[in-house]
Each structure stands twice: as C-alpha cells, then as structure tokens.
Amino acid sequence: MALIKVSELTNTGSVKIDDLLLISTTIGSGYTSNHISIGDLVSSQPFLDLQTIGTSGTSGTSGVDGYTPQFGVDYFNGQDGTNGIDGIDGTNGIDGYTPQFGIDYFNGENGTSGTSGTSGFSGDLYRTTSNSTFSISPSGTTLNFTGGANLAYTAVQSLLIVASGNTSNFMEAEVITYDSLTGYFSVNVTRYEGSGTFDNWIINLDGASGGDGSSGTSGSSGTSGINGTSGTSGESGTSGTSGESGTSGTSGSNGSSGTSGESGTSGTSGSDGTSGTSGTSGRDGVGGEVRSFTNSTTWNVNHNLDTAHPIVTVWDNGNRVIIPGQITATDNNNLTVTFSAPTSGYVNVVKGGDVITGSTAIAGTSGSSGTSGDSIFVQTGSLYYTTENIEVDGILTMPNIITGTVLDSAVVINPLTHVISYVPQNIRTTYGLFSQTADSVIISGTTAESSIIGTGVGSLIIPANGFSVGDSFKGDLGGVISAQNNDTIRIRVKAANTGMLLGDSGVITLSNVTNNVWTLSLNFIIRAIGGPGVASIGTIGRFSYNKTTNGSIEGFAFNTVNSTTFDTTTQTEMIITVQFGSNSINNVMYSDMFILNKIY
Image 1 (cartoon, helix red, strand yellow):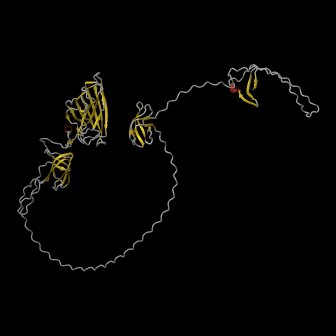
Image 2: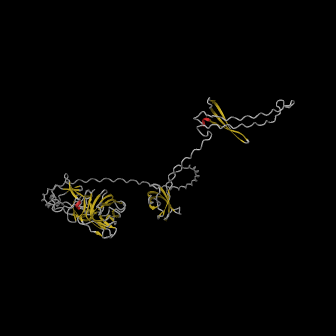
C-alpha cells in the first residue's frame, strides 16, 4: 500500500507529490513502511501526472446499534451490538498512468554486464636447469654453461646455481652475459658452499639480500671480579759493610835542581859548495796497469800509482780506442770505467814522468822534471778534452751500439759545444727495421704451420730489454693466394725463438680464390715492459684478398692482447706463420713483400 503526500493540485488535474510512504503487511506482524523521496525518482519532472485515479468501492452499511438496557451496569457504553453484515467490496480502481520517464520509480532495471578486461602481461621466467658439467668453484671464478632459452636474465642480475638433489652444494653468481636464443650463460661466482663436480643443476633468480637489521641493544656489563690479594714482598738482603779506606802516603820531598852547563861557542860557517851541473831531462813517465774485461758495464782498476789523475786509455778487442761513458777516480790507487751497455776490451792506466836528479860535485841542484807522455787529452772530473786537432785515419768506433741496430744508430755533433754524442736506437722514434727482398717459400698441400716471410735486409730481432713502453711498430705484407671454397686459414705472429704469441687471427673460413692478391696489415704497441705476467703487447691485424668469382674484396680483422706470456727481458725474433685447414693442393700461398717499421 502507498500513501501519497500531495502539496499542490493544479487546475489540469495534475498533483505535486512531496512524499511516498510505502506500507506493506505480513500476516502476524504489523506494518512496515519506507519513505521514498520523489526527488530521487523523478528529479527532472517535479510534477507527476496521475491522470485518472480508480474510484473507491462503496462503503458497507453500518450495523444496527445494540440495545442498551435501562438498568445496565455500564451507564456510559451499552453492550456491543452484533456485527453488521459486511458491505459489498467496491470494484478495483483503474490502474494509474505510468509516467513517461522511468519505468519503475522504485526499482530500476539491471544494467548490462561490463566487457572483460584484457589479459595482463606474462610474468618473467627465470627458473631453468642445466646438464653442463662443472664444479663448485670459488668466488671470482667465471663459469660458462647452457641452460634454458627465452629467459629474462640480464647482466649483473644475481642467480642461484644448485646441484640437483644435493642442496648443500650451491653457488651464488652474477650474470656477465646471457643469450636468450641459445640459453648460453657466462657468470661470475660471488659465493659458494660445498664441493664436487655435477652435471645436473637447477638455476633460478637469487633473491636480493635484505638490508641490515637494526642493532640489538648492548647487554649490561658484568660486574668486575674481585682483585686478588697482592703477594707479600720478599725480604731485602742485608747490605755488606763498606771496607775502610786506606790512609794516604806522605809525599816525598823534591830534589834540588842541578846547575846549568855553559853554552859552547858557535863554529864558523862553511863555504858554499859550487853548483853542480844540471841533471839530464827526466825520462817519460813510467809505470802503469793494463787490464782486460769481458762483456761488462763496470771496469774496476787497481793501478797503485798514488795519483788521483792518471792517464787512462780504453781499447776494444779490435785494438781501437773507444770512449767510455764515464771514468771515476775512487782514490789515488783505484778508478772505475763505466759503459751504458756490456763491453769487452782493455784499459791502460799510466802516470806522468818521474823526476831524475842530475849529477853533482857537491850538492847539485835538482834536475828538471821529465816531460809528460804523448797524451793530448786533459781530464776535468770524469771528462777528457783537448784543444788539438784530431784526424781519424781509419775507422772511428762508437761503443755500446745495440746488436743488430748499427744502421739505425747515429753520431751527432753539437754545433755550439762541438760535443760528439751517440744516439742509440731506442732514442730514435721512426726508422725501418726490415725489408723483404725475395719471395717467401710457397706454402701448398700441407696443414703444417709455416713461415710466410722471405729473406731481406735489416733485422727482425729485438734484443733483451730493447723495448720501451709506448714503442709502436707497423708491418705490411702482400703476395698471392689460392684456396678451395670453405677451406680455413689461420695467421699467427709470434717469437721464433720462444714461441711467444704476439697476434692470432684464429681459424677463418675462406671463399674460393685462385691466384689472387692478398695483403696483411699489422700494428703493434708495447703496453708494459718486464717479465711474463707484467709485460703486455697489443696487436691489430687486417687480412684481405680479392674474391675470384666477382672480384670483390673479402677479409677479416683480429685483435690480440698478450699480458700473460709476453716477455721483454728476453730477445725476441719476430715471425709470421700461415696454417691451412686441409692439405689440398688447391691451397697455395706465398709473400713477395714485407716491410716492418718502428713508427713511435
């Protein structure tokens, strides 16, 4: 049932509804009601046109009043009369008109269901297995193995590698590289537990380490223990009694002084003797020391001439005068001759002429000093100089030139000081080392590693300790090559005397080539000097050749850094080798040109 509160009735038959009261009944329970605001139902139509409302049914006739006795007990209300007969129910009213806007003002229709949302992205995958065989390895070890493909690993991510079925053996590692197409891993071990070699592994993403927890409160300090009682001190020994001092003896009396003797008379002076004749000139300086030395940078000479300035001459084994780096007098009887490189030869040390006394009748005057030897050099400190002209009749030899580099050394005369200086190879920056003048041996029908360098002028030898940091070299080779299609070749640059590797192309596949030109360009740089593990050399090579089918240029490049076996403290003789992958007679190669230069 609904009760409608009407606040306005228009002249058109419409009403303005202020409120609805819904009343429902349930057998055995009173009324329940609910107010519904018309504004909530038809906010856009304040007036609701009800049109024609059904008429109410006619009321039933009232029952006859009951009779009230005159002497009833209740003088105010008579006894209830019998109920009147119920009136006939009125006909149902015509249903009211449904408004234009909204079908049901009390319950709206259900809305249609929304469309389903798109599926979320698939989560990243990390768990995989590996059947590669490797061992539990210590921190810092690089491991390479194959796992599952199409995983989400990226560099620097942490992963866990666990031996399947044996979880006490595992490693934690960081990803160096991961190939999602092949499943190939390269990782660096950061932590490990257990040991052993396995071929069944479980790999998964390692959870990030949690941050450090807050420090717990410090426990209270325990009470200090009671100090132990000190031990009793030992008794001091009794001091010995001091001995008595002896009495001093009495001093003896001084004796009387003797009388002085008389002075004797002075004798008469003797007459001067006649001057003796002058002595003959002193002879040339005599005495000296000759010593020989072999392959030494320091020559120590004990000459025993009692002079700090002897005359020193140095000779090589070919009896030629050589000039050392320095001569130092350590004292009047010893000196040291030093060279910048090990040198063999002789040193001659002499002293100036002695004095010879002339004959005298009575005491003759001293003879004049003998003339010095024929040396034209004067020593000042460790240097020798002369103001005389020097004419070289023959060969002037400069010592200490590095073996194999005579053509690359120089003697320089300073135009201001006129000092002659030796400039060794390692001071000069750019010069030629080797030039090939004949074809190399033809390499054909073999898989043996063979030299591709022919004979020439110059040298491919660098002596021990002949490198300096930053030394740079450039080599250019060329020749003719034939090779069957898809055969392989390997080019190596190494030391012929030690096998020390300087550059390596690795195994390279060739196209079909028939009597075509090839070239090889090499660049070397000395990165560090020293023994193995300290010295380092970097090499870049570029190999190219003309393809027979279309004349296009093909080739490859390679880069090698050797910081493990390279050694500058030993002699290095460079060689370049070629090795074919098969012994086919169609594989033929030789060189007709090779130039090696030092460029820095």
